[in-house]
Image 1 (cartoon, one colour):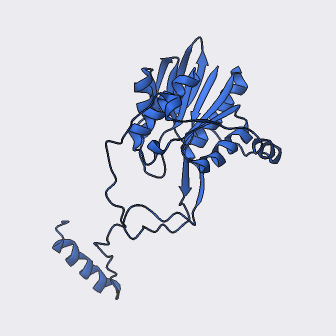
Image 2 (spheres, one colour):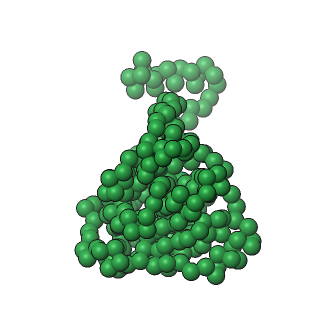
Image 3 (cartoon, rainbow, N blue to C red):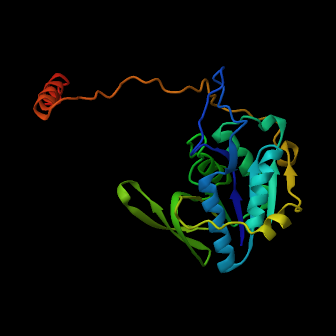
Length: 257
């Protein structure tokens, strides 16, 4: 079984102060730490677990410049078999649908039995690349997948719905699944694995290799900005009877009761 996993390099802003560029074109990222997109990391782990159960190979694909090789090498260090970086000056700054189209063309040429992506990108909050890939390749897909069981050319999957509900489906392979976080526990790369991965060759594919002569985004980010503070909390101080009276008056004025 050939499993293709799409990885994205994103800034880790969980504990970092995010600042917007003066011109509003994006965030200042020169001091931010970059890593594998968190949902993609779960997709990678699921691919490695499937490989351990049924055999096959895991191929990593990422779109970007030389900097994305650090996440590809981390994937190789964890146990992936091959890695491909897609790059071309024409692919810079593509939106989600255009990125999905480029990845689909690359995956089509690589060959696949199963494609795994993360359920969303943590840097822009979008969740469109996986479904776009599946639609272009004309294969079934499912999002927010929390369990995968393979057998007889089909996959039995569970996916998360709103309200804590789960949906169980059977999907004919080849297919694409966008993996939900929490499906597994991603492994750490060993020092030996990291050392070996640092010497591995990463294949590079450009627009000419994919048969793409022209591509453009259909959407454009106009401006980044920090949301303005529009309301403030009001602290009511004083003895209990006085604060209770003030609170009751505020509730009445706001029309709550």
